[in-house]
Amino acid sequence: MTTEISVVWLGALASLCAGLATGVGALAIFLVRTVSHKLQDGMLASAAGVMLAASFFSLLLPGLEYGEEITGQTWSAALIVIFGFLSGAAALLFVHQKLPHKHFELGREGPDASYVRGIWLFIFAITLHNFPEGMAVGVGFAGGDLSNGYALATGIGLQNMPEGLAVAFSLLAIGYSRPKAFIIALLTGLAEPLGGLFGAALAWLAEPLMPWTLGFAAGAMLFIISNEIIPETHHRQWKIMSTSCLLGGFAVMMFLDATLG
Image (cartoon, rainbow, N blue to C red; front, top):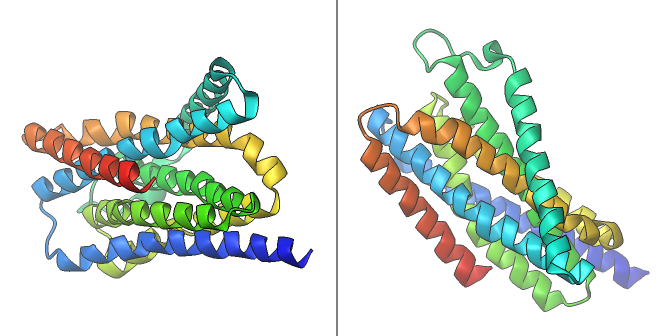
């Protein structure tokens, strides 16, 4: 019993450290002096690229792997992940339609409410995707292979740094102060230890849920990227720059996932 409790707390603590890495990445906003419209579009496009890569390499592909391990069949694993993927997109569509515009209104000199709402949906989707990552760390520890759990936590923590930067830059772009943007970015990572605790304590339940949960987070993320972020960063004259920033963000996150995942 003592060993089981220790494994649970190790999983929670390791996923907490991985989540706090989000705040480490967000520290870079203190190096930025002003946010012009051009820089704003570039930052948001880079953030979209980071999360686009994370959706594929951190969520969908691991979801398929988990599903194949559980079911023993590629086609059934794919169907479970696809169901989760479509569920996540549908859930964000529902939130998008129901979320009142005036809730995030910053005033007549700030961005329009629909744009601010889109940023907050993006941040919500990033927070949502941290939970299954934390679950993966917790399940890794619960499996009894501590080295595997530590490796997962380290890799996910390093991947969380550009995600924290993406959240902080997004908030900076819509008028939040640097301290507030940093704190909110840090808080998004705290979904990770919750997932880690759940995964380590209830591995028997968390592991079967992983394919659907990872797919759900990816669907939510891709809905926001396609419906909100990409259109927003392409409505001014810097479309080529925004596309380049998106590709750059994707490349960075793909490299991190490939080398640390």
